[in-house]
Image: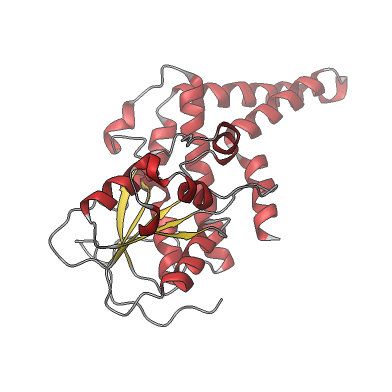
Amino acid sequence: MFFPLSKVIFFALTPSNFLIIAGLAGVLLLAATRWRRTGAGLAGFGLGGLLVGGLSPLPYLVLAPLEERFPAFVDDGTPLAGIVVLGGGIDSGLSEARRQIVTNDAGERPIYLADLARRYPNLRLVFSGGSGSLSQGLSEAELVGRMSEVIGVPRTRLILEHRSRNTRENALLTADLVKPKPGERWLLVTSAWHMPRSVGCFRKAGFSVVAHPVDYRTRGFADALRFSSFASDGLLQLDLAVKEWIGLLAYRLAGYTAEGFPAPADASSSEPAPGPAASR
């Protein structure tokens, strides 16, 4: 139930959807004499929220703490055992329809899959991505497997995890698939704003990882005074950030992570040896 319920909740609480619904409700209430004041308030709240969320620095202020939580990966020469790249950067529906890889605004994830495969030719390489749609369909991992040559990664190098539908399942199913040994050092590649929740899920699964964040949307806290030229841009970032903060809270309450806001294990962002996998 968690997966379909999360889709419904996120739809209702996504700022742009919520503000539009509030504004429309306000307009409808304006027609009712008894509720005219309430209607005016809701309409003003909806319109004002869309303006602030779309054009002000608010989206970047909400997004920056997520992206700044884990530093960029720097290879210090410590041996690596493998690389896990999370799905979310490929539009499965369009890719299947057009028979080519169509990336979305998180397209850096498959780009770095190809880059890291080239830079580390001897490491185990995992792509974890099922279908995030309620209607299922072709998984991202299956698409990457079929079209691996397009991104320059031989199919024989890829370990594909294609059943996961969310971040928790990414972690659990990947851990089951590769069975990391104590002391092994694995890179985890996902969007910078998604990294805290992802690391928390992998830790809970007993799979210690080193963060390799990609797909940045801000320049960090330097964007505290950044205004958007288009309201659609700001609302896109605000929706993304709020959804991720809600996800962090929901995962902590559900016991999918052990920390409210996971952080690097130490200043170098290396992780301790994994312990026994958490109960599933």
